[in-house]
Image (cartoon, rainbow, N blue to C red; front, top):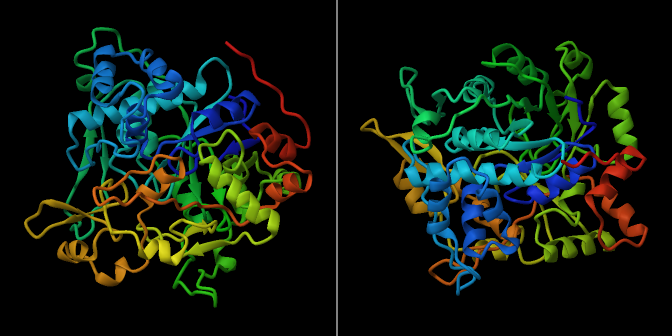
Length: 483
């Protein structure tokens, strides 16, 4: 495959949706869908009436139509539910997820990738998180059924994923070792998935699937070397993400020290030696403040195949971020008061997480404190071993009493925000809780807002993904062939 010069970041839940990924792919670069929580996102869109009929069109292409029909029966509501935000709950993941949840996850990932790839020959990838392990086998398989070209994975060390992808091309049974707190070295907890059993009702042939390229996201030379030497299958390239990138950042190496403003302090040890990286002899892309022509050229001169860009695409017209939030944030940039804060506590993962302030969101202290602590989605729950040997699930953002009752430390709950619900609110899919509380957003961004400033300076109140690509490359992109 021709290597992309620009990889569009896989952001949030649905911010990097199929519409954005498709537009980037149509303009000759790698469009990427976010694979996070696609099950609940698709279920809510179906309950909202499936505007445009896009999900139903993709469901018509899924190999097992009986299974696709079950999804529609469970979640589709013609013209949408009466109470707009009273969404039906989706089952939560555990070591042994329900058949309903497995079907929903496989199909949701198929649908998102199918729509992104529909009607053209451009390249589309999916972004998954090692920190959210339990859905990953099913997410990978669904994306591969739709012909995804790249799998991008960060927030951890995904050593087993390349080998799993090799087996899934042949529809073989796979297993993924789980990270379990309080487990002993002798324990072996894992998720398993058997594609043949999954398609037991399907009478058609299961043909060999194309194997996507695999690009892990790394933040150090050590991690890059570990991935290249110890991964269970081929690593096709590396995305090198610096701490100024949006979303989750790798913590500083060693003890975390905070600035006077309360942000983690990064030093020389947290950088990547590109000369040593080149010795690994794989293509790499640089991420974090590389979203303009000057830094793109610097990346190419340093030996990179190109750059990964998130923030500039996040605020373009095709992204899934709610239009009202885009407008409010663009206004703060226009006024010169936009502030991106690297919050060391916000994420239940324990990783620093960048947030941008724009009014009523969990980035504001009063809005955060007014939210009831509810954990009803559970994607960022941590798995732990109970005294009786069974597994439990806890999240530092859940009610403090519940977290402590499960053996967690109360100090770990301080400042933790429910990213699962907030990220769905970012794309206009907030849930109205039984208490009447409507979930509020929490928007992330990288520290570099220069491209948005340049568009504003040119009198543009909004801009397209094509505008971003043009600004980075310094030329109009080549449009790919339709099919």
